[in-house]
Length: 149
Image (cartoon, rainbow, N blue to C red):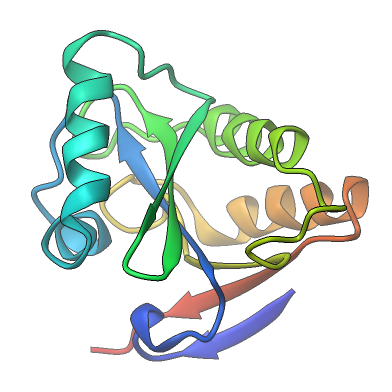
């Protein structure tokens, strides 16, 4: 795991992950920036939510503007509703899905301190879950971005 300070969107990683709710709302925080910077991702995300296919603990991924945006479904509703088990499950869902032998987008995942802002979780606990996921799938590495603003 690497730690960075600053703007998540300055990463060189080709995979950017963030926490999302299953209601189709990206109204604040990193999600709002994702909505603005990656409209193809938002359009797909919104559709998945509207038809009821977004499930807590799973993910969707959309190539958009040269990167893959991972919507990790860590919340059922917007606000302080993230759950630790959904953070871990959504990461593991992606790791199982994405074949590291292909490495089309690399194996570094740029991610904010997921769930610990608007989502309401404690970062040290979330960090332990991400470290556990890396231990299970050592071919992947998180690049965790801490926003100082």
